[in-house]
Length: 110
Length: 112
Image 1 (cartoon, each protein chain N blue to C red):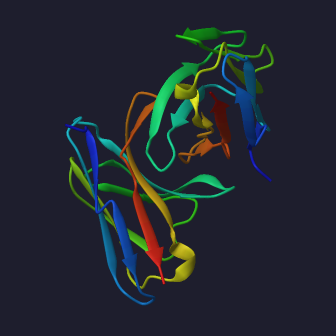
Image 2: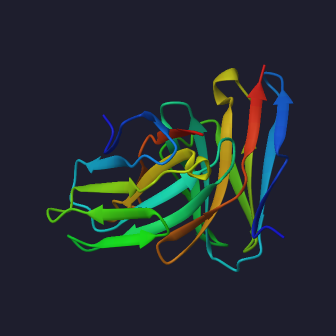
Image 3: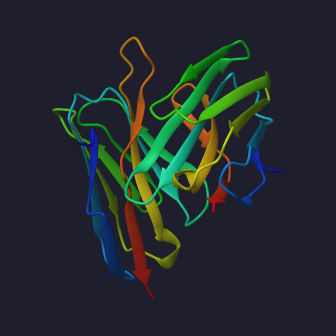
């Protein structure tokens, strides 16, 4: 079984809809991250959490919110999706300096 | 401008050929990480370099961090189709506020 899982793996939605992407990990790591990946722009950090009570904005947090429900769960929400949020979204955990990535969620906003 | 620049952006090589991917930083690197991403999938950690002049190898992949600690190279010897994917470097630029940056990636295709 994968250590970092993301659901859904693919999602197509319409402009204005609320979307939640979920991430679960069985690695027992405190640190968790949400990134988006766009062609030519690499990975950009949206939000990160160093423990259950800690939430921090990353480079591109506008239009997104997160919830750290437990050590193992870190959810990303798009309150009102817009087309330029179409991207590949990754959740990751970290232990020391190594990051462990989920398989990604491909989100398309029409 | 990118704090981590990778070159080339894409690379197509014949199976069996050697290749090098570079990652150049605008700041001193205190830790440089290489990841591989299969198309449409998550990143897999390859190796970490911390000391200037450090070199690490994993199977046919060797990475070096230069003495001045502002550039790293990833070298693949005798490339195989299984090496195909996107290679990304990452670096921790945390100074007070957490800041971990990824390069834009190098897309590698290996022709059989």
